[in-house]
Length: 215
Image (cartoon, rainbow, N blue to C red; front, top):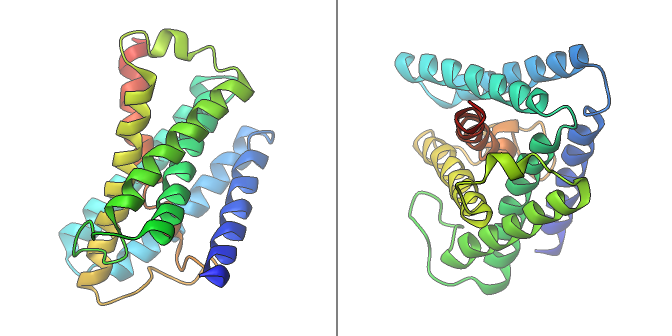
């Protein structure tokens, strides 16, 4: 467990560093970075499914997902919403891993045998902690207008559950393809989709929520 935890922690740290680094670079480099991620993601998805319709659906969904990443980053000039969304996703993933390993317990679903109810609860708890922490550290005043009709904690819970569902969806297709990982690009995590499976679902949902509240 210690070895796997260290790999997961280091790869999470590397990805977080990359995401926060691109916050300070020019927008064109961010776009190039997103295009690279999209190409890698679709390459892995293309290898994961055989059905042509699923390949096409994955292409369209990933394209929209990365579009929403770009839009969320640019909605707020301080990138506060982007930081918040990433923090919630990372918290959900990391908390799920920690609680699942520490407490174990009943399995959540046969789709992914390693997922437990304790891990799901831990993911929500960590998502709330990191979500609030990002708001506190970066002073995301934009939430005053975005969330005036919603409870912030319920929003974070919804995003955490969405992230976990995204994880299960990718796990389902890996199971069907008889694969342990979507690829080998990230040490300790396998493929890119193994690491961002929750994010590619959270960003579109949060984007639609943000746009709806801004208009």
